[in-house]
Image (cartoon, rainbow, N blue to C red; front, side, top):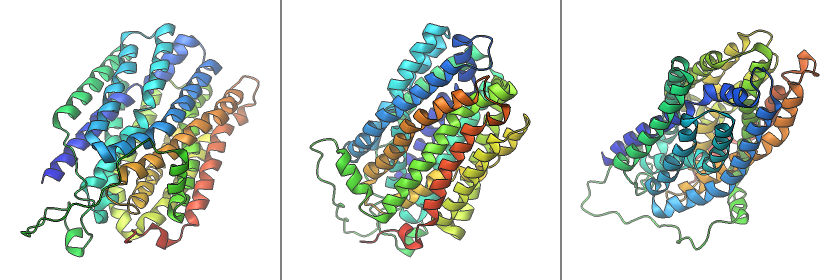
Length: 438
């Protein structure tokens, strides 16, 4: 039962982390434009600043996330999770203290630096923690449960931002980040990879977790990877991702889905501000629909569909929904259409847990941190390239010289990027997503 308790503490930690970090989401657009372009509905400077932050963050995460994931295989998940839990406090504290132009610039600088080791590493280390705790047969549902709890934290933070004043929202977010770090340090337990090293027999598959054997004979410890002498190089990471067709195709799907998803998320709020004059409350309403729908999807829909469809078919369906809602955003003709498009999240939110589950089943128990970090690094690569493409494109689309019917062109381009990921996922053979028993 220790594993079950550890997983429960991880879910609480994930909820608190998402609650504190996502709370500034509905207000940051208004805060940035109010400080840099007061009284205007379109601000190219704000768009470029957001794009620059995302590009630099992605570049840093590309290098750091596989390294941190690999180090967690050696030193433990909890020890490395302390880094994102602590670093996320700094930018939120700055925003809580002031929101003038100087403080906004300071926020973006510190947010860029800390996000390199916060956003990607928190997710990859937590998923490796889940893989340590939950056996293969139930891992997909466990990944869905984890991402569902993250979505629940997103929902709670958005509700708080919807009803709290702007200044109070930033202060509550900073206090929540401190509480997250304290909870993680006090309650989260370290893992030893025990569940991952259990065999996947029918009897064990019926258990929620791999419990210790009742045999008097102590099981021998599973083999560990050699100690790290240096950080893994890009060549070594590339060698891992090309070692099988599963890794290669998963990397392509992750890259193009990340390219489209990042482009959509970075430009959507500015598009809605320019075309429909959305403000904090409208942003919060839209994000609430996304968060509630995503939580319901991962906590309820995914556990029902995975046993019937399998990860590959569910991945294809999720990518179709992801393409559909990007194209629907791009042709929005009224203020209520984005709310309709947001409902597609009930399926599109399942892309990440499906990919993570497929990859997790292809490696050993003490390689989970490395492989999850590599996939996160691929996603970070997309986060570097995406702003270079979508930031100038969005600035041009939302400028006063651009015709109204082209305002959503950058969002349509994000949909086409996701379409490439869909085509790659369709080409996967069913045998490629089965667990590797070698």
